[in-house]
Image (tube, rainbow, N blue to C red; front, side):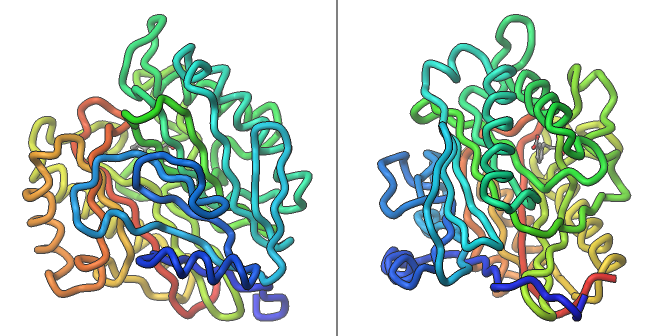
Length: 343
Ligand code: 3EB
């Protein structure tokens, strides 16, 4: 890998001060990000908020990406993006009416549009996607809306001859209750990331059909060389699933502990695929809790695992969100960058 490090560097930032975004924009280094405040017109380009109920004081921070310099804006149909030619952060927003009508065809259209944008921009390789689905668990026309989304998403990957199974990007899919807009945010690059699976779980793209007619298109994590000698680990939304089954129904403590074991297992998988060393206490986490009343219990378990004084404990953002299976009460995603090379 040391022969051709990707340039320029990609940096993950948890932004506490909006002035940071303004400064990065002026320098041509702001790629984009996800904020968790109420949806509003972009405060800065590519930073539209997603309206979750915030359960921690730091939840007005935003998860952003910087690269460049020389970042430019472009758009194609309903997809818009920022790119420096090496890295790309993009956004798709439906109308509320489109999302209300159903998510199968809409997800297929959205992803087809995203793939077209990635080809046009010359950054074809998806790294990470963030999917925000209004009424994710609602049954509609005989199929739960999350399962509708899985149908359309997988079909778009197949139509575009992209890896819908092994080799899929990292992702999360959360349910929103804000303005009814189906949103997708995505990070892509000129070179493919290394996908990772969790040895405790069946790959999501191989789930049995009891979880829906088409399987979810995501890997448990990706390892991404972001500049010479640095790897970023992006762990997808991780929940209380062992094999393919949700475990500990109704028990938020046990679900949180199972989720933490799954995160450790994915970190272990990363250690087999690269020399970078990651540990959960120094990762940046976003924690989604289905019931706001569970947040203190989840926080207690999380802080017991990572240490109350750790980076992970201080940085964790807690949000109320619906999770893609009705029996899941908590989901945690995490990322970090560390020195190392792919194995
Ligand atoms: C799971 O493991 C929990 O459909 O993109 C986590 C991360 C989940 C991503 C997605 C779904 C997705 O199946 C749900």
